Image (cartoon, rainbow, N blue to C red; front, side):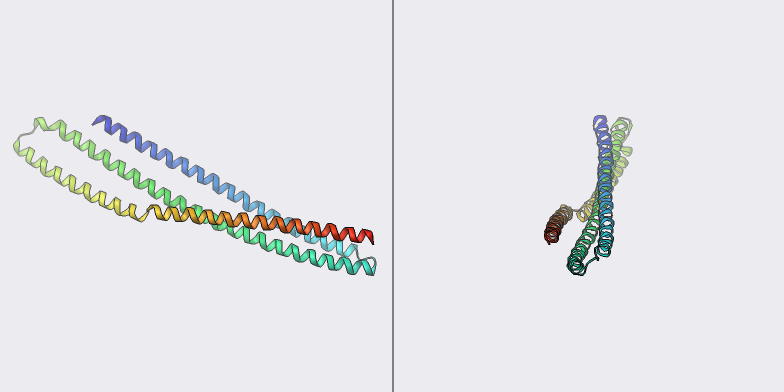
Length: 221
């Protein structure tokens, strides 16, 4: 019985350590998401600065009438493409914020599940301690005390069954289906983010090739 009690204490310590490690991992993931959000905001600021530079370039390049008309049309196209890219970056930022909220919810569910496991281990530890005390004192009891002890033991079993039913009810509220749905939703959001990033890079390459082509045409003229 002492060995079982020590094993349960070790299991309780391991569960607490696992809870701490999982919390640290989720905190690191949250920090990575915050860094990504900061990067998106910086990209938005860079796009705004590019827009300002393009406006300045429009004002500088208005020297001749023919070049002014061509450059104006080119800059209008560039501004429209930049606005589309800015809207895509804003959508990506909203998706990352949604992913951050989902990770916070997942962290709360994991903390609840581990707290239920710790409570179960404490209940088993208390029961084994009671059984050891009963086993130690049985040799010194007479028949009347033995009858009263059996009654107390029945009450302990009734209490234990009630506690186990409550734990089973709470565990049913945190079944594996909810966790699986959360993971599938996270995978779907990550795939959408990757598709958005690929579209953004394709749009950026198209913009750069268009600008290079138009600049070559202007140089030839």
